[in-house]
Image (cartoon, rainbow, N blue to C red; front, side, top):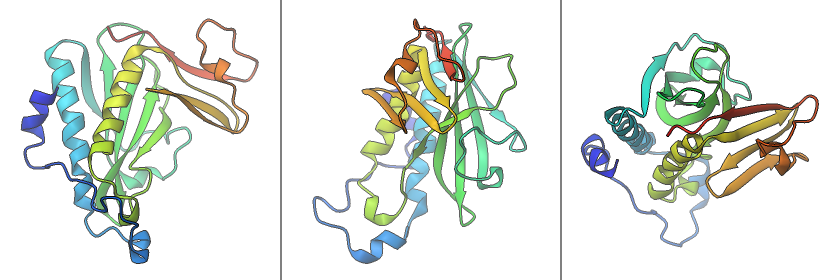
Length: 208
């Protein structure tokens, strides 16, 4: 994938942490002077898509912007300008979704979602927003952005329960563990356990 990224990302070079350990200036908390710095997310996703397609592991297609609202969405559909769905070629795996976001009419980051396997028409569920905050104060360079994209490809490709929710309680598997809200139970991510009444799980087979 890194070899492919050297081509897809040729026009979006990585950036170091602009603060280098220094505290951000107060005015940085309310601004983003260069939204284009997040285009590197697009080129990283494209590198993964090409690599997986070349190896026959997954295929990508664009989904209609007029589709149903994502479960747990933090923004309305009109603030997406491209939605991409990546499905494994092996049966039973979860789909990985990326929606390119718009802020003040300009391309910004990506919303990350997971969806049911191919053949089911349910909307995806939101599992992450990259970057989590786009202000200049929270900018720590591009390395963490690329790592976030990489981690979602690996997490979903591993299979198992990636996300579970019951009303406002929800939990999501991450590359290093899990993150949740409310009193979500880590056991909800156990594929071998019987889910309690009312719990919905997003679970899939490994991509390989």
